[in-house]
Image (cartoon, rainbow, N blue to C red; front, top):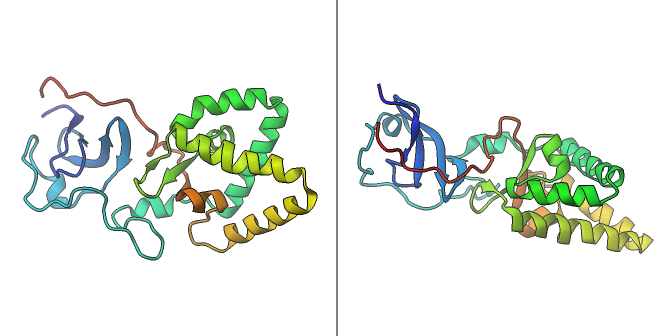
Length: 213
């Protein structure tokens, strides 16, 4: 029996797919970033080192016209953070920023942004996912989302009481009136937040080709 390892994806859709020693799994990786791409029973049973099938559809799978989530990733829809979880994360974020005198929160953020998380999201096992790639947001995307569109807006509008109230109301309306539980900054950057307690969407180090099975 061959050992489990990262191997070139036999479907041709990704760079690597996890071989569990007997069959192909839904765990894939591209440029060092892990994601999930379910395989059919036929694809899962392909032999190790088999050439790609003749009719794979490379690139991203087609999007569902209503939700924007791939129909090939039903688990992502089921993993969406609830509205209460989103609100809880926001309040915890503010609490952590106050407790750590903001400096600690910023240092913590710099460390976890590369995993698609903020300090509160790491504590609550949540992760930001980009809809276009179905992968965790990278460091730059998280910094734009949390430091520019979220934190800067909060601190700026907090100085103008009326604008602050309007911002809270509008953001609450957006959060309560969409199927993906997105906030304004999610809408702008095409991201969603999922509950990921098993770290299924956690970015991984670049997998290397095995020397042989």
